[in-house]
Image 1: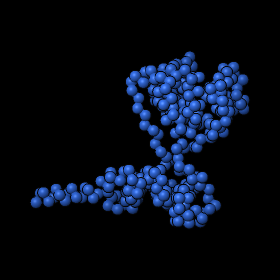
Image 2: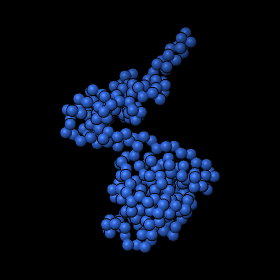
Image 3: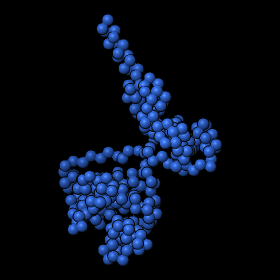
Image 4: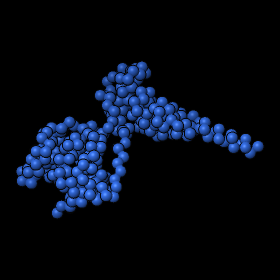
Amino acid sequence: MSWLLRLFAVILFFSSPLFAAEVADDHPSGIRKMAMVYEHGRGVKKNYRKAYELYCKAALMSDVESAYHLGFIYFNGRGVSRNLSVALYWFRLAAKAGDPYARRMVIKFKNIKPTKDSRCRRPEPELTITAEQHANPNRQIVKSWVEKIAPNYGIDPELVMAVIQAESAFNPVALSNKNAQGLMQLIPATAERFGVKDTFNPIQNIKGGTAYLHWLMRHFNGNVEWVLAAYNAGEGAVERYKGVPPYRETQNYVKMILKKYPNKTHPIPGEHPQQIDAS
């Protein structure tokens, strides 16, 4: 009799939503179906947060129905604050891909301006670093990191490389007399502002510096001269002088980088990098 109980337990496990979630992990339609299980409580306790995460994952894999479901979640405030603008972002995305139900919602609420969903975004690329690379990364290794990190922030990798050259000459343990640290010479306040815990970790430093460039690029509408001046002297100084401040160090800094990166304008990056665009 005990073997029958064990067999029954095995059958229950392999037919359970949790097992299905594992096997469906790489298939958008399977992920969507699991999201529906959690949204409607089919065999499990309702969990709108989990449903949202799964719909988001599938939508980022171009699953049209999941985009519609995300719109429905925001439209009805299921586990999130009701937000018609974000709902219309997802409905519009699904409608563009041919979903008839989403198209009806877009037509019905055509006067509402869509707003991107800041919560649903692709994860940053995972980067590994050896002890040897941490201690003494060469220019090529740094470039490989920058080429993976910078696009996630909507920043040209060549600009990041030019800033690193000017800031530290690719020295990961560089320390200035103003306590600016690492490859992109982050001062402690900037490091804290952008979530950098170890400024001498090259990858963390690049992420923090690039995040700051992303913020500056949006703040100064893609004006590279102003962005570079602000990176060197602070955004307050640029705002005060409405341009590159009359500081010799800052002016030389901007000129030096523009020799390496001769573009005075840069595309303004999105507020939340690596989002699918419904505009």
